[in-house]
Length: 261
Image (cartoon, rainbow, N blue to C red; front, side):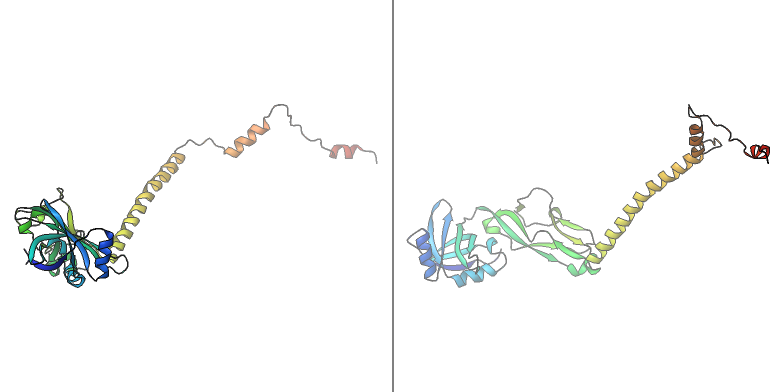
């Protein structure tokens, strides 16, 4: 568990949008502390102090002591509203936590031994699916991080939550065995694999058509020969059409010979 930092705050006496705008005009960030069956407490904090803690990794998974007029309240940051243009904090929410409070926090994931991964050494890419993992744990035992060892991972291998050693007393909010990261092939290798798969699919599509054409040719060659072609058969049918007679043309040479000179 990380060291608990202290954030100095001032009490606010009024609630509502007008009071929040007044706090911003005075250079403060309005906020609230709630939880543990106690009434909410309106506060305002220094924007620079809040911005420093907000930029640290795992801000929403670290306990803080909110110091108000000499008293401290242990709380967990739950929400920060940012300006849509400047990204400056405009409102912050803190939730009180007790010693036995069970909470859900997003714990950052850190990957170790990337240089010992055969897949990464061969040009593979570490595809991070989850940069944070939601864990249910005690407020006094919030882990700083979750370490994932990628040593020995080759291209195509992946790491699931069941292969990761979680801190004692914690459990993930998701019950299924989800993927945390995988080693993907580089772009050039993926393109070669896609081209090879496309060529194999095209060859598989051509082979059945080739076999079908060969079977059709074999079937044609196995038919009996009738001795005449289809065109001859059509000519024979036309010559036998009913109502038509074929007469020999008269020989005019005999008539020319018998003609008087």
